[in-house]
Image (tube, rainbow, N blue to C red):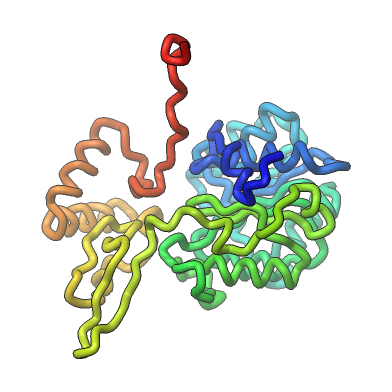
Length: 317
């Protein structure tokens, strides 16, 4: 095994995942004893696009609990797994209470309490839902962090399902340790944790977030000058909205565009595109061209990780 603390990044691979999660999760599961072939994912989306569990279910015979609140996405998910009796599907929004929390939902299934893999991606209350989980202790947890927040910043949004702000990597690391988990790998938008009793099997000497996080391209740094100006450096865009962030001032996206673009309806989406063409015409002309060509799925280009191309056999000689 490599002595590099970030050795798991060498195993990034996408079958259905977004930034290499399939390969990393598979490699960790290979190292863990006593796996039970159960996984959980919410929001599970349509069960395929950027899914962290689809490959486990369809290629490795995993049983699963898949949770998705969006009716249209859930219909696609439900159709995909009609022939899978051990894939339990719920059209629900995971809450934080005793009746609507993850413990209660999982309690309606035969999943073991120390199941293999939990994937959390709900673009907001991720930290709070993981914190609320008490009955179950999965071996491996993949959870989304906000990649625009610097590693040393501690941030957690209010426990409001109507917000789409997320949390910082540091906040997840601190919560993980409270719950008995250690950070194992940091991908561009997801952090992967392993239960502390299993973590030594990975032979990672330094798992501090600064050591494991190598993807910082989406971070915007804000600083003050001596004469009272506010300046920006690093990534100077609103990442998900793909709009410029002015260098001369910190300015929010207009109030009528605030929200997660992935949840915009058709009218708001059209307004967003028109505003983008006014504020950033070059960027938005290219995004719309790709949309019409079917090559842009709404993911910011900076997060659309692709594995490096393998050299042809004749190049190896």
